[in-house]
Structures are given as structure tokens and as C-alpha cells.
Length: 472
Image 1 (tube, rainbow, N blue to C red):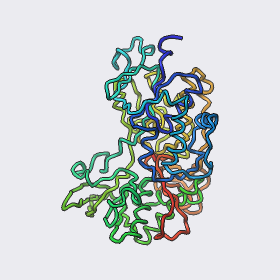
Image 2 (image 1 turned 90 degrees about the vertical axis):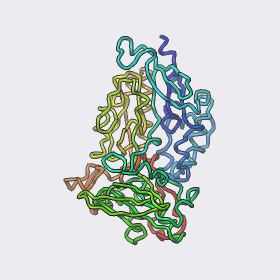
Image 3 (image 1 turned 30 degrees about the vertical axis):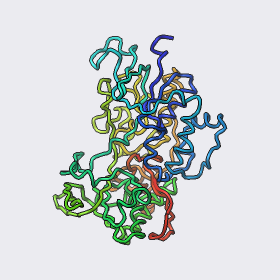
């Protein structure tokens, strides 16, 4: 064995996909080190621990991780139950990270600052593939690696609030009024929203989650107002799903949201994008502009920016990456996940070949691999790392035997209004649009990363706690 292969594979991130990669590496007998910027496993998931996901446990666990846990005597949860983010961490990710086969190899508080090749910048070609990776941490420590699996995700790099990919005018000055996706409206963050006017911007899962929580808060706390702004001219994409969705909790979400809008509990602004923000008198005036230049101003107390996320590739600027200029994914993967053509349930199986860069041995996996596409599912990330680790082990037959069984969402296009034909690529066209389109794929298009409140269709819209919520 040469010196390069004696080095560990570095996994960046101890979230669901990063720990799945660690489990696969352990099973393959490959040395590895997991570098986690947070203080615990699943640090990003913990930030929405109050939110139940809309997919059952069986979709949220990696098979290799499950095998390791079972061997250690772990008691599995009900596979058909819907976990909260907190339960996902406490009952799955943390026990996984504490296993003897993984725990010694996980470093917390280890934020990666840069990745390069030892002694080589991006211009140097000779000997590059036999030169170790140099992973530099924020504290100055450096780790050498034979390969790097970047599962750091996109939670820390949300999209801006303004349209055109640019911040709205005054967005920086109004930062004190802005909320990250998935605030704990009914819990820890309640005082920031109760009796106040909140504007939610976005049409995906995280927006729907927050809107339902705010509507519930408004029923309980007088003076609480909710406004929802979307760029499209119709909310049909968000309302869709229903019986066409293989995940009932997700399919029910749009129906409940529509009921709140129709009843006037949520004011909906369609065809608008945020143009400017102006703080004034402890509140913020928001100018929204339509496609024809028409404007409307609404003054609110809080703004929830549920506008999605984007990858940060800055740590890899000294590596030779081949990124699609639109999505920021690899060029081979981009057409398979393009949200103009696909929903999370129609993305075809893909693995190491689609994730490879000219820089041999570097792979971005999980949400980060999808760039700006919101079509990611956690199950997809698990299959990615299975394929990548098999390739690192030299088992190319297994690496290229990529298989993926995803629940049908009923969505085939991120903008159903643009669909030209009457037939859906997911199957026959539904009888009614609202029942045949799945919910927009949201912040990450995933079963995990965009938690949504589970709702009961026949529950009173203004009633008590409606259950949980869940994408990326």
C-alpha cells in the first residue's frame, strides 16, 4: 500500500449524509476522519429540532448506519412514525456518532477553511493525483487525506431575499428584522412573532411550514398578522400534492395552507418579488415589485426569508472543479436534477461518475452536491455516499450499480404552470391540478432538510397544535 492510501478519507460534516459516509467507510475498512464545525453531530438539524419531518423513519436512515446501530443493540424507532428534527438527532445521529467504530474518528469544532493538494496550487499538474489533500482548519491545524467527501451542506449559506439573485435594496441594513428559515414560531421564538405582522417570502416547504405555524399563532394571539409573498402568479405549485403524494403528511400540507389563504388568515401576494427594505420606527417597510414594475409596500415587524440555499465552494478554490455554470453542481449531475425539469421524486439514480470532478478524489455529496437545485432527497444522499465509498474501495462494480427507490411526489416540473402537455412525466395526468401536483421542493427538496408541519385535513384551521412540520 502506498503512502497516499495509508491516509484517511476526510469527511466534512457530521450530519445525516456525512455520518452515512463514515458508516460506509467503516464497513469497507477504510481509514477516515470526520470534521464537524459544530459541537455535536447533526448541528444543522438541531436548529430545526422543533419541526417533525413529513417522511417516516424508514426514509431517514442509511442502511449501513442502521446495520452498525443494530449490531450495537440499538432499539430502532417505529419505521412508519414521523420523527422531529430533535428525534432524528437524539435517537439516530447522536447514537450513530457515539458508536465505537465512529466516535474516535469524529472531530467537533473543526471548521474547514480550505482544501488543496500538499505543496501544489491549482495550476500544478505533474504528480497531482498521487499528492495528498491538504485540509486546513480555521484554528490553523492541517489534516492530510487521500480523498475528501464534502457533506457540509448549504444550511449556512441561504439565498438572498431580493430577486435576480441579488440582495434587495437595503437588505443588509434590515438584517435585524430578518429570520432564517424555519424559526420556532410556536416555541422558543414565539415572542418575536406573537401580536406582530410577519412577511414570509418563498413558495417551498420551509415557507409552508412557517406559514402554518404563524396561522396557528394568529388564532391564539390577537394582533398577529401573516402576509405571504411569492414570485409566481399562482400558488398552485405550493398547494399541490394531495393524494398523488406518496408521503401523506406532505400531500396534506398544501390543502391546509390553501384553507388559511382562502379564509383570509394569510394574505397572499402573487407575482411579486422583494425590491427594497427600509427600517423605520422599529418596523421595516418592504417594497414588493411585480414583473411589470408595479409596486406595493407593506410594513411588517419580521420577515422570514424562506428563499432557499446555495452552496459555498470557496473552501475548494484551489481544487480543479468542473461546476455547471447555472446550478453549481457537477456538469454531469446538473441536467439530472434541474428543477426546471425535475422534482425531488423524479431525479434519476446517480453516483460516483456523476459526482466526479477533474480533481480525482474530491466529492461534494448531499445537499451541497445539488448546488442551487432544490430537488435533493436524503435517500439520494445516502446512495451517493454508498457509490462514492465503493469507488474509493476499488469496488467499481458496486460503485456503478446505482439504485434509488423514491416516493412518488406527483411533481415533474418545478413550475407546473409552464408544463406544456397534459400528461405528467410521473404518470397519467390527474383529474384536478391540485391533486396531481406535488408540493414545491422547497429549501432542499428533501424528505429531511425542509421540515413541514404534519397536519390533519379535517382539523379545524384555527384549532390547537396541528402536529409537526417539515428542504433542503
